[in-house]
Image 1 (cartoon, rainbow, N blue to C red):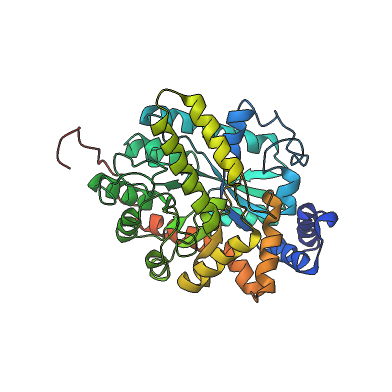
Image 2 (cartoon, helix red, strand yellow):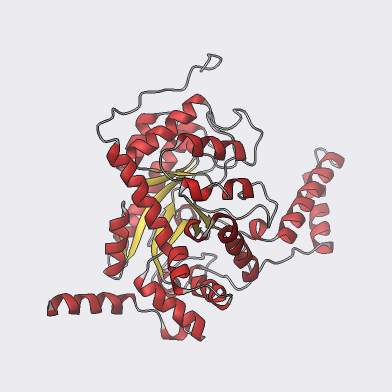
Amino acid sequence: MFRTALLAAAALSAFALPVQAQDNAAESRARRILERTPLIDGHNDLPWALRQSHGRDPFAVDLTTDLQASTRLHTDIPRLRAGGVGGQFWSVYVPASLSPNDAAVATWEQIDIVRRLVAAYPDVFELATTADDIVRIHRQGRIASLMGIEGGYSIDDSLGLLREFHEAGVRYMTLTHSKTTTWADSATDAPKWGGLSPFGEQVVKEMNRLGMMVDLSHVSEDTMLDAMRVSEAPVIFSHSSARAVTGHARNVPDSVLRMMAEDGGVVMVTFVPGFVSETVRAWSAARAAEDARLKSLNPGNPQAVTDGLAAWVAANPVPRAAVADVVAHIQHVREVAGIDHVGLGGDFDGVDSLPDGISGVDAYPRILAALMEDGWTEADIRKLAGENVLRVMRAVEGVAASKRAERPGLASLPAEGAPE
């Protein structure tokens, strides 16, 4: 008994957050909550950032030091600790521009990066695949590391490959990214299926059988509705915000938020400026329109387009989002979907800019403190931080357990031009 108590105390000590980060009472209170409840972030693109700028090598930068001043990275170990992060879904993202076959290969390489990242810092990270893993790892003072595929093209239209990704430890798949796939419509591309195709429905059913969470960030509203209709397990939005607050197609409409209580899922609010600030979203849309106008006026003259766009930006400086914008989205999701259906999915290292007051993964106590100052209770904060995600994971695991005797799905995508 005494030895167990000592081990528990040592684990909490290992998880202790830097004293210098404790700059006000509300943030200190938030950090104390996160010592007992794992903050689970739904989406972090550090693996892709390592691939793009650091040769796919976790040792190419010293993640044991605060990298804010020396790199563009939003993530390092000191800031993860200061942010109280207890569970992290590392995105094994690859671009929608890749062919499905190339996307599958690149996704395996991304999985390899995550595994090497965890192996490089075994005293900090441990791979997790279940809700119980997250709780255990957090209690031991380490950060539970999970993986999520971002874009259904990564499975190359193969349920067999989906199963292999699950076997490798992937625990959610975002059904699309920025482009409509061969079986699901994206929020930011022309629709082709009116939601999910028949094969897409089989993908969702196989994910239920495996125990892989269905992630609806990036998908069209019709795809959201189809997936929620087909899935027997709760769904997630790993990094999305509220469309009623910021009118971006990537955000979740109130009609879907109102369904979350019945579905049982969770919307993990993201911090992307164009998704949380209507002013930033409108500026981005105006910039895109100006870019299109300049290209139509200057065919074959890319320098004129570049110069013209630079002049437009100089005359129309980009506005800034703020912590208050993020808080407004969290509050809205809570008000419409309910306290049991809101979470956090920052999208760190997946964006070029962040709201003022949020420079990296150390920002979570600041956000939680703002919510507590608005009247959120400790029980509310625990649900937002991680309890809601743990509940969803256990529900998904329960559905998979009930389907253990079922045979693996054998559906395949019909040949081009053939009826489904």
